[in-house]
Amino acid sequence: MIRRRTFLGLLASTVLPQVAIAADVDNEPDYYADWLRAGQMPHLAKRLPKFPRIINVARMGRTPGQYGGSVRMIIGSQNDIRFMTIYGYARLVGYDSTLTLQPDILESFSAVDDTVFTFKLRDGHKWSDGHPFTANDFRYWWEDVILNKELTPGGGALELRPHGSLPRFEMLDELTVRYSWDAPNPDFLPLLAAAQPLVIAGPGHYLKQFHKKYQDKIRLSSLMQEKRVKKWQDLHIKMARSYRPENPNLPVLDPWRNTTTPPAEQFVFERNPYFHRVDENGRQLPYIDRMLLNISSPQIIAFKTSVGESDLQATGLDFNDYTLLKEGEQRYSTKVNLWKAVRGSRVALFPNLNSTDQVWRDVLRDARVRRALSLAIDRHEINMAVFYGLGTESADTVLPDSPLYKPEYASAWISHDPGQANALLDAAGLSKRDEDGIRLLPDGRRMEITVETPGESTLDTDVLELVTDHWRKVGIALFPRVSQRDIFRSRAMGGRILMSLWYGLDNGVPTADMNPAELAPTTNDQMQWPLWGMYYLSAQTKGVAPDLPEAAELVKLLNEWEDAASSFERAEIWHKMLAIYSDQVFSIGLINATFLPIVHSAKMQNVPKEALFGFATSLLGIHMPDTFWMKEERANA
Image (tube, rainbow, N blue to C red; front, top):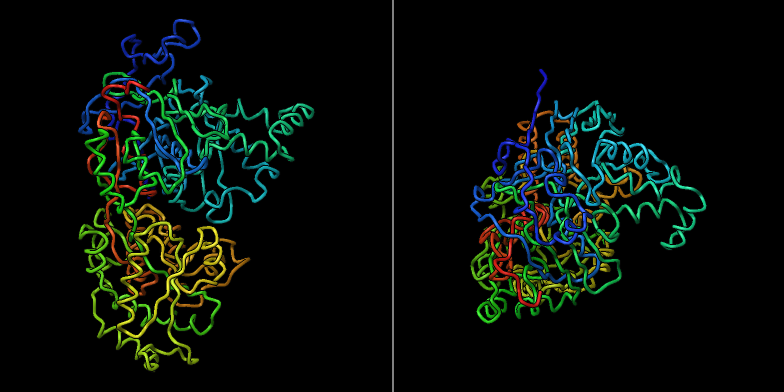
């Protein structure tokens, strides 16, 4: 039986029936007045697709907005201009606020048994430079990027070849493309909708000038010299990078486009005149004209935000900044909202099962030890002392906001029970203690666990101080160690860290159709099993194979998920993996459903008071910042 899923633009809850948008001078942003008068830009009806995506702002519980305004944000480095790609959240397909997939850039798409995917583009859709966006842009990326062995020597993204081979690509007509695999690829659509999306199309009309196949050798050499690269493929990669939009000349499909060449202290993103979304009144989104990203030291972002130097701030802030930010509300006309973090745990402990210390490695691979470490922790004390009782005491697992949530996953081995913890440690052969009451390892060393952290938040330090006291009561000594983030990650991946403190699962609100790879050893930056993760990541050419049965079972289940042909099958596999992961305590979650402060100017409208926030929800992305607007522009904007 063939199972077909078809998604049309008119099915989404925020989308009205598709109708052509008539020319209406009242719907033109004032921002374009000079260009329009000079005849340097077509009017709105000719800039939009024939059937744009129509966002019913009122149905979202928001107010249809007004054009205008320059919004300031603060970023910690030049690399953080990628936030604009995430916030803009223009995707071929994307998630709405309920994490349901729907067409966005696409007019519609269909999937047959998750093996054949057909995409229909919007007639008349244009890149930000006004050039048509058509199936040729998919063909260029397929034939001249993915299949070019100099540009893509590895044979294409692993996500495009989950079973070893690339799909078949077909350009059916100017507005329709198709990708076909012989076996299911359920990850394809979620990857296109991700915060850092899988790229399968690019502005070929612009990028051909940097491609060996299309550009004159002398001119190509001159461009390489100008951009300070030694290979033509490096030139193409640099000029085509869309996720971190450093090239202001690169045509985009996002609501705002970068106009600043790095290096710079301020990056100016201005509205895309050809953006494909409008509100129910025919006004082109985004409402806001410009986004100004100012670089500052990460350590003072919270302070600068508290004194009104940001009109919209969602990064560089943590829960322990809340009091400071609230103090500035009245004086600087800001509003501080608390959004729920979507991670499986705000902080989690990761025992390294691939530690280079063989004695400790054997000890930590004993599930009784991991469970004892978890049971010894008083999560209620941590919640009250660090999170003011606003978080939820939980294992590192999915949140109740996920359709995959079960209470038994969250409650696995988290009750504060020092008696049971002591019994488990004794049963694991760790009953001997020294004169200070510290347990001894099988080789006679004291059970002293050094827990490493990048130390980027005082919140982490506060948590470790409490855990130190909890573990001391069951005969384990904890010593915190702070490392710079890059050094911390390098040590963790090399097995030189015994245990680390970091965030829990990135995606605490998954659906069955989202990849459960986080629950299995799949990458070398997973701190509980970096070598096993490298084995999977390198297609068994590096690292070592998991030799713990439960870890190997997680990899097996992940492979089954990738072969599953229905959401029901994938949900069953998710539950098996969640049950194993939580019961085995592969990461020791502490508190989840914590809150993060989101700060915005009091003049900014349509910012949700409560919402989910995290990389899994594309930060602000699924909440559609293109529908935010300024009630009146600041005088000094």
